[in-house]
Amino acid sequence: MKKFLTIFSVVMIAGCSTDDVDESGSIEEDESGSVAENESTDETGSLGEADNSEGNEEVGESDQPFFENHRNEIPELNVVEEEIGRDFDEVNIQNDQGGSRVILYENDGIPEYKSIYIKNDERLKIINTNNQDDENGLIYEEIIG
Image 1 (cartoon, rainbow, N blue to C red):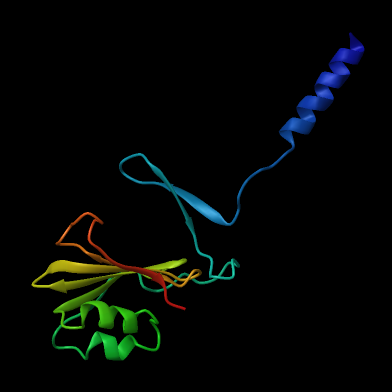
Image 2 (cartoon, rainbow, N blue to C red):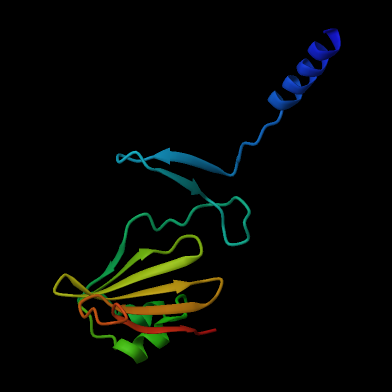
């Protein structure tokens, strides 16, 4: 009986001492009860400052052209301009954190196109948000790098 209690105690202590906590991110619960994990890591995977693009960046008619101001920073703009043009009332960067960037191209406050750029793969998708055909509005999907 002493052998059984000794083995049981060793197993319990060993099992309880294992710490499998991921310290790189925090877990938050939103209003709907689902759980999302937030990490502030840069592309190399090390902890760093989060992008300071908390709000959406909007560019209207009165500002300088979005395509000219961001051409050096956003490599997919050349392809976007070739495929759908550049005549939009507003261009909103919805997400530019982590490994992807989502940009909405709007006229009269209605999103007409969406571009999704996967940074690591250099893959670009352009979607027509108004005209949903057999391919769900997909206009372009290729690796551009």
